[in-house]
Image (cartoon, rainbow, N blue to C red; front, side):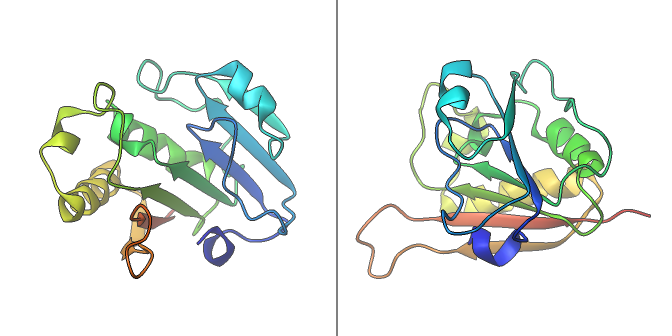
Length: 168
């Protein structure tokens, strides 16, 4: 999926990153910056050119310049954000016009970490909730809701919400 949405040789932000970025190994990017909570995991991630340790639930403002990135990924972590609208609003600031955010998730989570709304919804509800986060944040358009689950279901399902930055 990242091959479809992120430009090769682009500058990417891996938001809520860890020891792996899930980017296609054969695609070269100019720079990949990770932001996550565990410095040891971030340091171990071979795709990151640099990283920032930050808890977005405590500080939702991103420490990056306006229009700095060509795309952003949030992989299996959106369900842990307590201030998703603030994070996505500021993410629009640091992405270039029309740059995509690719938010992926499955039907698994750490139950003690996921927000209550996530527990109350099914897969379709999760897609709708993430879409509402983007709409409430503003500055997002061309929002797509995707089910990229393997067929037949031999592994975990994969869902994605993609939005593009709309700037005046």
